[in-house]
Length: 122
Image 1 (cartoon, helix red, strand yellow):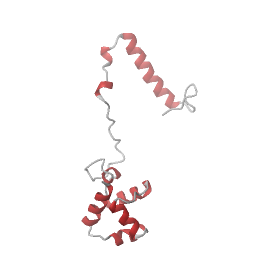
Image 2: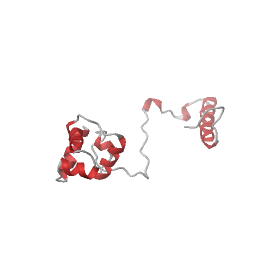
Image 3: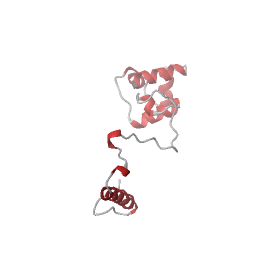
Image 4: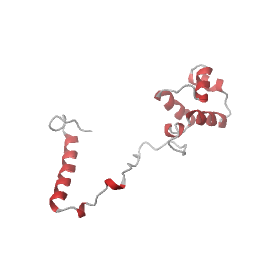
């Protein structure tokens, strides 16, 4: 998918492989191999391509069909599988208290400088 997206974005700008290679200070054959799918750029180069073409890395690698870069000030939504979601009101009072205590403990661990009980906050 990356090779196709790079070619489409380059052609949309009306640029040659050579022009892109010059802009990125890489050999024309290196860029050509990216477009042919014979070589994969490292993450730094992916980020540079995304900035250059004003799109997201996710778009370049095919994780989304929306080329618009995401607004970094807005966190991406967290996808939760429905079977893992529970309604606390359906739990017994003791189970509800345990869940609430675990959540509170997790929040507090993140505020400690060295974690809790040897565990590091995530």
